[in-house]
Length: 303
Figure (tube, rainbow, N blue to C red):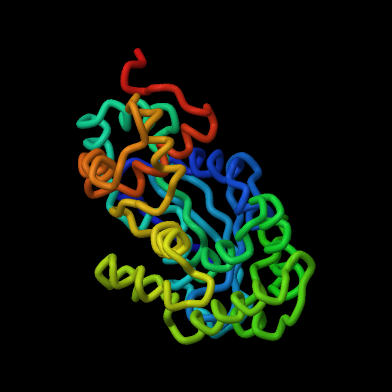
């Protein structure tokens, strides 16, 4: 057991992240929540093994403990991955100012306790979820992904919780069939695993590239298209300031929130989001969350 701390820059509520995860179907089975503590398990960047971590909030600090499946793992890498998953690797001190500039965002910040996006544990897991989820429901995809974790991933216990980390890329390559996966999806998952082993799904690498170059690099992976590439980059690598133009649900949510006469085109969507810089992805997550849970209704004129 190794202890660690993360000091958020800007306001942060672990409770809001826990509430988000409770309604986020793709995360089903990958975490445990006992009201005050959040437990998670995941393959560690670099693929030398897996880790489980439990975190809790102590005033303004996030404290945690972790268990590692291998002595070759870096505790700093585990801490960094937890921080990235909770969007604590970004300086959020300007997020409140975005809400003051845009009343729609301000209302949602208040409603959702200044939620920061909760990301996938890695671009690798985001890509896996994108492939599995093609043409099936999110619930079906979550069950299939959990089955792969239970059969091929490390089982780790911490804080009284037992969780299955998803299969490491080299282990996923050994899987030739699994319930709910047709041969084409299995081939695509193998391509994702190879991309992870080659370093093409490294979060730091993707974040260092110009946005369009990162997307183009992701689209070279079999089965990763326009929407999936944005999903992997924004919610897998945790890019905070980008516009998901390929997400049709984002347009529906923006239309409802801002009481627009029609779904915004690329220019209008970008113009609205520009007011949220440098947290444009955070703004989209808030509005998508509100829209998904309330089925819309204008926020522009609410009192």
